[in-house]
Length: 358
Image (cartoon, rainbow, N blue to C red):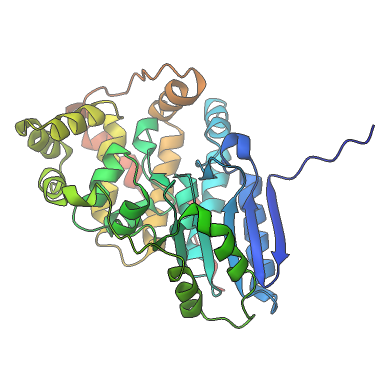
């Protein structure tokens, strides 16, 4: 019996003048492994130096989404065993995120379906970010005792007003138009029109400019620029325009509206420590000079998270046991002390994240 060899988790090939990077773990909604991340780096090397490649196109296999994030289960097992997967995985991933943001050729991300966590890092830093009517984009890490990483603090801190603070602390989902409003995406293209646009993108001249690529995308786009959350900007700005989490909670508590109370309930389900760390990272990111500066800060904090009980408990409740009932440590916002926070923001010496100078 002739059994076909299984397809790899990452498919890299040239189609016409496009370098294709396809995440290929559809059963796991294309969750990223360390090996996939390393493979993407090699593909970017290959496409950058190939004169026949005009642009890079990132897509996900299957119908469910581009990428639901990193391999959380693998990180959980390594954390429990005292391993170093977090250090290796995030170092590779964050350096790659910075590389995508500065990639010299047009880089087009097709952000259809679920785009979460690590999937945001692969797509939202790119030059051309295409969402659809099926896009569900989120940075839900505070629900895992973590924080929005992969440059998420840079992206969220550059969203209008307090929209980024809202999405970062609640982990709520953006649709395609709201992803554009929050500056995570550039154009809504209906999923039915994507095959035609893809055909156009794989057929461009090798010397096609980024502005020309964007014009091609815009020709298929709906022109939508804001979704339901954008309409709530005044309320969100009033609630989340504070630098202390306690003051955000007070502002929500004082507002008897259904939305304020449901938002308060959502925050009550998240890791208190994760939310306090997130808010501080977001406020620091507002004054950062670069994405790289934010990634260095995120890497320091991520290594501390990796060693924490909160991360293991958050993953256990959401992914392993799926009881949705994490026991956070500490259990209340007011119990998160400056002494607890300090290690997340400390320099880490020889392990510090650095970026290639090429």
